[in-house]
Length: 361
Image 1: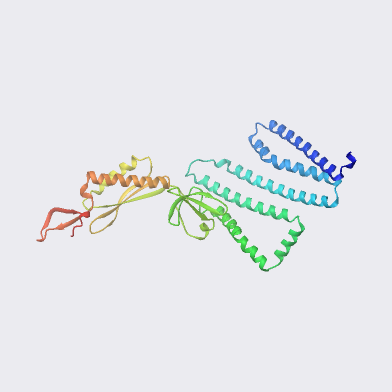
Image 2: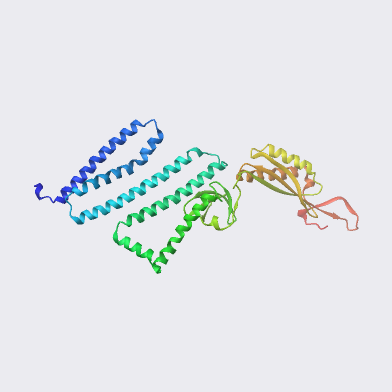
């Protein structure tokens, strides 16, 4: 009965059985290693991440070892060898991707920080994420190219394409330009770091924070929770504002327009009370200055500091609201007025007309 079964089928069954046996042994060895190193978290992580590649490597080794002894015809053997080569190249790419991932995680293990103003952590996190994505793209492209080069037709086409300067080469070059420009921009961003994750920026007249940096675009979370998607090359080629490039702390300015009769010293004291009573103030800067004058009002600038851009905005709103309330309740004469004179030329005794009444001087 068995004599009627083709030799290739028998060889294939034997190959499959050998692979199953070796995979079983691989599982037993893996379980034994996990038990031995159960007190070593790093080794356990390494074993878990390498389980798939090591299993595939075991299969490739067994197939490559037994394939010459199998009763396959030359055509089937050639196809099997080419497929084995493709799988081996993919295995190398898989190992490279895992190595990149583990290397990034190992490098960042000392920079775990939940503080939004931790510049060092954000700097390294941004660098690692960008370079990891660039390395991933390069590994995938190189792996795919190396796998396809196992086939003669693809190899000949690739050689002729790169050797010629014809239309096909130009088309491929133009098609690949966005990929390479984004890769180069990603490397530039990782090295020079004009932006980092969590930076407060103004892009296209929109204020927001850098939420995500991918290999092709950057996601900016606008203050009203909209998302602005910006190409990666934008931050290399165009100017933009980065409010937290070196330090997340910011000054917040509140402009007040008051009458000349207002007691500036009392307003300055009130500003200091507001700042000291606010949890948003970081205790560094609090001041009130007369920055400009017009024929009717003085321009006052209240300057306060906060730990982050978001807190600076909230502190400005709080200062503005409480200073206006203080003026309205304690010094209503300090609100902008328009002074008038009696028609006969004699000045009215203390006569004033509110600015909103539209009086004329």
